[in-house]
Length: 364
Ligand code: HEM
Ligand code: HEM
Image 1 (spheres, rainbow, N blue to C red):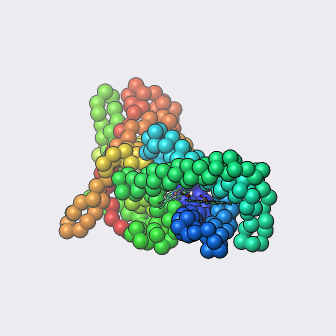
Image 2 (image 1 turned 30 degrees about the horizontal axis):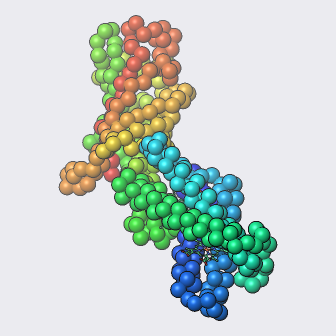
Image 3 (image 1 turned 180 degrees about the horizontal axis):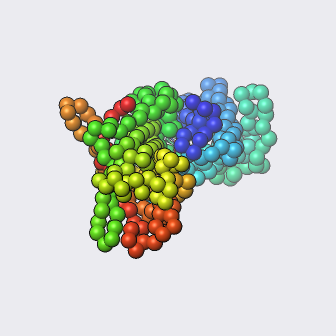
């Protein structure tokens, strides 16, 4: 797993800092509670000294974490997240970062106010942050407790949100913060190893059709040869990449003369542009079994953005499990130069072409 973040995943650096800080906060609470239970004496002082040293360590790690965050990309939330969810995430993360500084700083100020200078594991003595004074000490003591309470409240919200992402929204937000072992424990081997499983279209049981208006009547045709590859990616609920290649010369409108013309210079010009291709890497879930793939469609030498809605379902066919993928999109042929010269006119051949597909996919 790479050290740095990508826009999809937290790298090892960010993960290490995130989970180390969680472990240290748990240790901090344990140390403070143990110290609290002890009578004033050597033991209590030793516990508190450790608590302070660890607390300063957390402060330094929080600073390092923000710096690391500033020089790394931040993984984006799933595109399907609603505005209030995004706002909530931003708010709780900002709160957590602020408290990650406020809690140790208030502890440090409390110690300075009590005239107990802070040392980091007996190695370095830190400067006092405030003048000693009983009132300041009491204020900072309450502040440390109150801020700690706020931190716990934010952590609870944060953990609930992480669990909602994993179990309710079924996206990869929790998994992408987990190291290899955690990902494996959550049962997603392929995401961890980075090799995504791919599904391939089978010519048997798959079809790509199109409909267009000709001379006031609806005509239709199909492409006989095509290859579709759907990479399942690391998100179990949403595929990662869709790659469609259509052999333009395999066009079939059940009229040889018309097919010949469609393969010719004025339409697909298949000797120069044999393949029409659609590649989408931005696939979002739009409800049960429904998705939208946004990508680039290339026909002839023209590439344009196109969004294709589709439905994907697992089914048993011929005693084995296959994935059915169905959808349709309307494109304007002239956007892609399909129709040159006189054929730019839409009087006899309409501009809108509805392309539909019904595919049977299986691991290839
Ligand atoms: C993120 C870091 C920290 C966490 C999570 C944390 C947490 C806590 C907690 C839960 C308590 C017990 C509060 C109570 O009495 O109910 C406590 C007490 C205390 N903390 Fe921290 N603390 C942190 C950092 C620091 C630092 C950096 C210092 C000083 C340099 C410090 C100094 C103290 C002291 C002196 C007490 C005892 C207060 C008393 O006598 O009532 N803490 N801390
Ligand atoms: C069991 C406890 C925890 C779990 C399950 C958890 C889970 C997560 C997850 C899944 C993310 C990634 C969110 C995303 O990819 O958009 C995240 C980010 C974050 N976590 Fe936690 N977390 C936990 C504890 C904590 C604690 C104790 C803190 C801080 C005190 C914390 C602070 C943060 C912050 C600030 C971010 C945002 C990172 C950024 O945008 O730079 N987390 N956490």
